[in-house]
Image 1 (cartoon, rainbow, N blue to C red):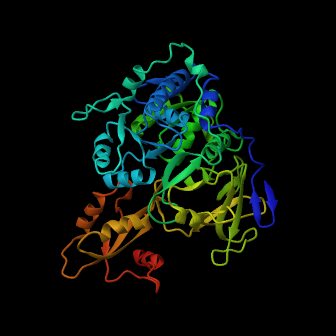
Image 2: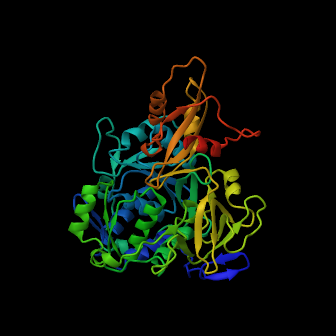
Image 3: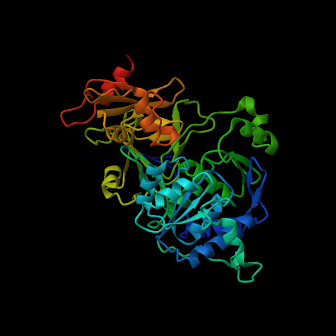
Length: 500
C-alpha cells in the first residue's frame, strides 16, 4: 500500500505485456491443451483447452469469412453454456468487441442494448432466440443470429448453429493448426475496446461500459495476484454467476487463462448446486477446513473492471472492503466542495488507474459525469480510509437499487409507469426487505377519476422488465411526489414515508 497526501494507492501496477487479450488467451490455453477447462454441472459434458482452442479458432475463421473486423460488435444473449466462451474467444481473436446481454431481458431491454452496441451478429440460446428474433425485425440494420446450442427452433430454419458452422470450416489440413493460428493484431490495447457490459452507472438507464484489452489483462492479472488468488493449478470451481454479469465474466476469463477448471451451472438451482459440490469435489479443501474458514469482503464496479479491493485473509476489521489492488489509487472527496479528505473523513470514493473503463459507448455526457478531466472515476459511494489504507463503505450518493447483485435504475421503472395513461407522476425507491436486499417500491399519483389498481400497475411494469426489476415492494398511491424546486425527486422523503 502506497500513501500520498489524501490519496491511497495499491502496489505498483502489474507488468502487463503490450499484446491483445486474444493473444494472451491463446498463449495461456496452449500451455496445457489437455486440461479440462469447463464441465457442465448438469450433463457432465466437458470442454478441454484443446477443444476450446480448436472450436474458437474455427469459429473465428468463420467470422473472418463473414467480414467481421476490428471495431465490429458481436452480442451474446444466453444462459451459461459450454459454447458461450467459444463465441467470446472467437470474437476477441478477430479484434471485434463482444457485448453480453442478460438472457432474461424482455424485448424493450434487448432493443436498448442493441441500439447501444449495434451488433452485426447475435449468438442466442434456445431460451432467447424467439425474443431476439422479434427485436431484430424492428432495427434498421441487418443482424445475423447464430444458435449457441445445437438446436433449431421451428420457423427459424435459416439460423445456423455453432456446431454446424465449426464442422464445415476447413482448418487448412493442418492437424496442428491451433498452435500456429494468430489473432488480429491490436495496435493500442489501452485504447481498443474488447467488451461492452451493461451498467446503470451512478444514475439513470443502463449504459454500455467499454473495457479495453488492457482492462481485460488487468482483470486477469488481478485475479492471479496473491491478494485475490485462492486458486491453484488443480482447483475446481463451481460457477453459477451469470456470464453476462461483469463479475461472472471476469471469473470465467480468469479461469480460462489460469489453468483451473470451472463446473458451470446453466442457471442457479439449489439442488444442482449441492449435487455438483458433492460430485466434482468443488473446493474439498475448504470443506475440510470449514471450521476455520474466513469471510472476505471485496469492492468493485463494472466501470472499474469489476474488482479493485479485497479484504485480507487475516483481517480483524470485519467491516472493511480491504486494501487496493495493484495499479489503482483512491481519494475521498467532499461531495459538495470536491475537496480531498483525510483518513477517517467520510466522502465520495473516487478511483484512478489501470482499472478505469474507457467510457460509456456513445454517451460522452454520461462519461464526463463519471470520469472527471483528471481521470478520476466518481463512484457515488460514500466511504473513508483508515491509517492502514483499508477502505470502508458507509452508504451511497447514487440512487441505484441493489437487489441480489443486480443494479436497478429507478428512472427506468419510473419511465414505464409514466407511459401508462392512468399515471400522472411516479417515483421508485428501494426498501430493505430484512435479508439485506433492496426491493423496488413505486409511489404513484393517479390521474383523476382513474380506477387503476396497484396490482394492475405492478403487472404493467412486470410485463416490460426482467424479473429482478419487478416491483416486489408494491405500488403505493399518494397525492403528490415530493420534489425540489428544480424538479428533482426528494427520495429521502419517500424513504421516510416508506418506514411509516
